[in-house]
Image (tube, rainbow, N blue to C red; front, side, top):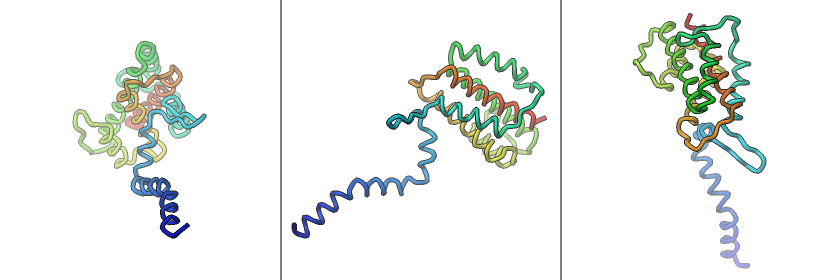
Length: 190
């Protein structure tokens, strides 16, 4: 084997690993965002989807969001009434129930920001602006902020992935996590 053949074989052997490494180095800061935006990830026997993510968020909420014995008012109704209403909506349209649950989180975030800060909000602030205001006002811990982000991401998946399917358990987990987060924000507002 001459030197040119040897160099050609080495280059050929290193082409794909080198290309993968180059893409990884270029995208290394964006990879966490890309992974969070995946609706479904499947590799051999490992599968992560909306349901698993919703269960994980519900579990995180139990750890990071203090619960209260009182029934907090969420958009004029008690938390238990909202839970019942969302369960009825979920029977007809799981996607609509997820969106409605998220809207309660947004309404509570707007309420707490208006009551606890001097920040002026537009009449329809987007979720990113709400998150930024919650961060600036230091109203949520890092874990609670991550939950807010996870709820927002899951809501986006429900709205923007038309082929997505939602199990009853996943929707229930999402609703519970969203209501707990909204109730916590309302308690901060009062």
